[in-house]
Image (cartoon, rainbow, N blue to C red; front, side, top):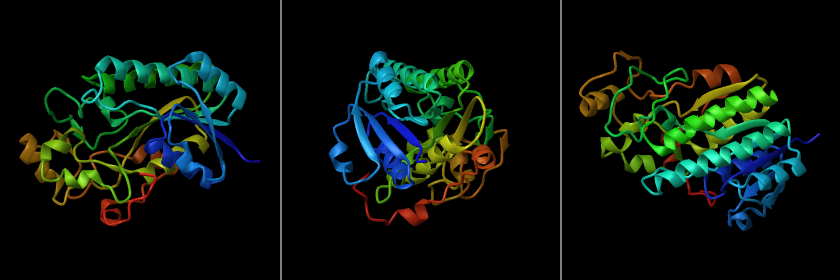
Amino acid sequence: MTETVLVAGSLDRTARWLAVHLAEQGWDVTCVGLSQTERELEEYRGLSFRTADLTEQVEMADVVSSEDPDAVVHWTPLPSPERHAGMRVFENNVISAYNVLTAAGRANARVAWASSESAYGFPLSGAPSLPEYLPLDESYPLRPEDPYGTSKVVGEEIGRMVARRYDVPVASIRASWVQFPGKYDCLDARSDLAAGAGNFWSYVDVRDVATAIECAITAQFDGHEPFLVGAEDNYLDRPIEGALRDFFGGLPDECRVSGSDSALSTEKIRSMLGWRPTNSWRDSMDESESILA
């Protein structure tokens, strides 16, 4: 029997890849949001579309209840407050997370949603700083200083509440800087260490995000679990320990990264969900740009 998944949020970038990937893997996918890009995806079988405002609780509750999905993927964050008013970023992200996740819980659906590496607080901090240790993992404290990162911390608390109240598994996906085949923006940032210092030059290919999401909504686990999702390597073409010394003036007290290592540990999602990244800038930088990007 085909499983059903509701993908809630904008289909402008990452969520489009998620929806198409799940459809190609045999899921019956319903996309929900106010995006106007659905026409570009009409060629893909297994995709249907519903229009709803994720910040309107009644609308989302009605859609989720009528669709009765096996799983819900929530992927609709507004980006950083550098491009949007801070209160708008915080309000949109928190309200939509509450509406989608609680509706999914009431429907007894498995949940995966877009948290972020920004929840740690480093990418949008007032001043660049080193963590106590690298690589970062899921147990590291969340200390955001901005509306976007804070909205992700609140979203994860909503996920914990939903998991407790409705006894459904909720995966908070702390994805790194998402890159697209043929359009690896991170490579253009190499010349300026400051541009990537906030996440210590980490990244992830959108195709690996898609497989991580699929693992999260098919795996068996209880309660709420956060998962870091990143590439195996960093995007620099130099040893990361040298970049850390050059930019920060030293290394963390505990540093277990060197060479091309990523500053984000994916050990938890590997061991719990059996996921691993398969794409690297070394293989993807010369690919043709997809229309999905």
